[in-house]
Image 1 (cartoon, rainbow, N blue to C red):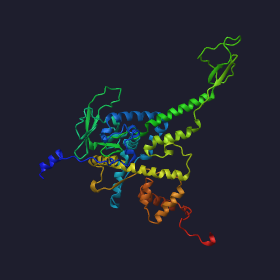
Image 2: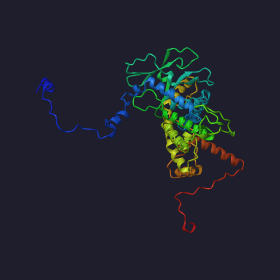
Image 3: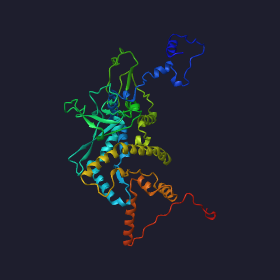
Length: 480
């Protein structure tokens, strides 16, 4: 049959006969199109990541998330705690260029550390991460600041999410998202930065913006979908819980206030026209003095309102609601509440093991998204100013790491014993253990050697602590 014949047969040919077999249905309950399911998922859509996170949606979520943060003390404290746990006192550069370049590398590390203090980099990184749970994202611009107290005048300027937008964005341009222009490979080319904050009331807001090259911008956000270009508030799924918790707290407080004072109704049990009985008008309010006895008119009885609010469940309710609201931030409950009174040692360690893993993952993301790019920009300017020793190889041959603050040990003795055992079994290295504490193993050994030499010079004997019991040490029968 020719191609034309096949086409005509498909259009005018015999239709398949209907059968009595039932239509194939999905085996997933959630895919069934029942009235209950249709009602529950009425708002479900199949928008793309960028269409779902439209400027209007992101703006509404930012406003409400900031409002909840500013009015909920636990959420306010949580955002600060997350920033402190991630950034701490700030990342420190550690170059690994070999022993032959150790002294020169140390000069670069010291110069970069001095620049970080001059621009207060740690504070700006904490600010960017503190804004992410509510705003969904934060931006940093590489700018030249002549007031930086360092020979390198590079600075990181942190701006809010709404200042990166395109007032005249073309919805038909497939390579443009509000505030960002991409190339055909999906790489950001330019960011549109408004010259004034759109919420600034001190100046007349204009639609003028600057096209900032992508190499001078860092975008700190966590995408939740492939192709997502802008960040959405991480608290979007739990914003309503904050309002519910505050309303419940207000109801419990009202119930407690009613129970603590004489508030109720006056009931008149005799006819109002009887001699010697004071006549009371309907719906009149009677003011009473707190903490005082009172007498009632003849034939009148006072009935106090009974608080029906289940205030005995208040603690459990607030506990669960706080946990639900902050769950999108991946923090355990004692980090959310700032209270570990209900924890034992095992529970505390069990909760913090995944939390510390999350922090390390976020630190690695900050390294690739912010720190490495910022260091390369600093290097370009420092090299022009002669701060990079000539003996060092080219930058593309450098290897560097970022040292972060370590986490405080819950049980230092047990952790120290575990580290000692891993070192004896060659399951770890001193470099790895020192890195977990935010220290350089070379500096630790050099400092210890200097201290031991000085103690020997002073004639002081070094104290040797008692060795902890080895977990695999066999105990003789006569000593058991």
